[in-house]
Image (cartoon, rainbow, N blue to C red; front, side, top):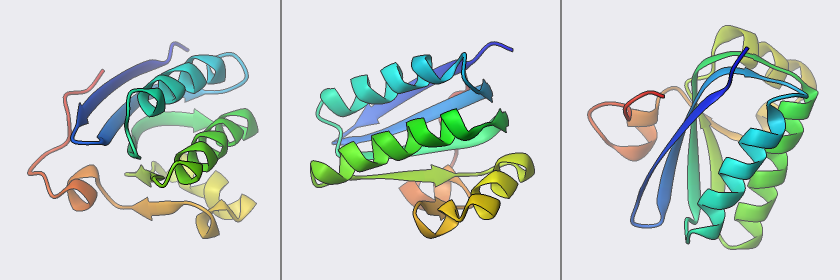
Length: 118
């Protein structure tokens, strides 16, 4: 399955919206997008996972790597709107204790709605 990613940046914050499956084949694309966002002066990434149908260990590793880089630069990476399938992976692996997880993008950013989907 194809991975679609969109990014909206404003005032040092990026909302990265992902749609599709994050796995061995699509993780490099996600890594590139997250790295680009952090290189553009973003300090905080909010990753909208509401349309992610599947995420394997490679995807989780990619998200962890981006979170580490963000934190090294005084920022953070937060996961928003996890689907039940992704929530299960995060919970089973114990990553729910590592990531900041919010129920929706709007909850974290204070906006009325989420960004335009990819």
